[in-house]
Length: 240
Image (cartoon, rainbow, N blue to C red):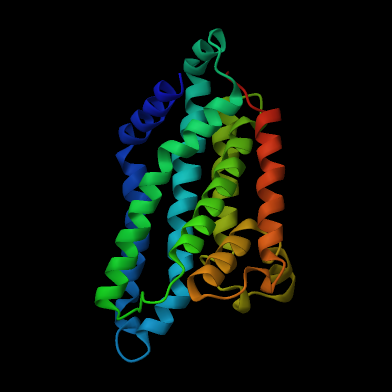
């Protein structure tokens, strides 16, 4: 049963290659656009700060434009109705959805780190790789659960697709990804500091640069957000 669900999630992922291209191509495209200003002395240090942002973009795209939107679409066409006649529970569906995409995210992160290390002289020595991967997985799980919650929040599956786009681009805009938090007005900075992308970017940066994860409230906020949306995604899960 679990193996079958993992296969299903992988097939969904492969059937939407544009999502993969957008999710994993966008960070590389941004890196290419920024390459002129990043090359030269100090480029490695600049990439140390920028790396978490690029990786979180890929994780968010994988969770929202792939997983969440695909789930809402499967609800809309009544495909998931068949699963209600099986022993499959929401927790099985969510768990296998996460497992099926972890390898894809790790592959992207490894590729991106390799490119930045080679072309931008970013040092990869002395990193706590186990901690970095653990935080990356926690970030991915958090965004996956957020996306799954909004994919099931509304009764109408088509309306769920709309709210997923609003949440996704809202988080990109206000979460310190498309616009640096420091450049925002005070009110927007307060909002940004309360949003999951800010937690993930900062905690992943702490793990990458060897800073204490408990340096600020971000790690605790990240864990709490993951637990809360995990419970909510199970409560509101819909097969149709």
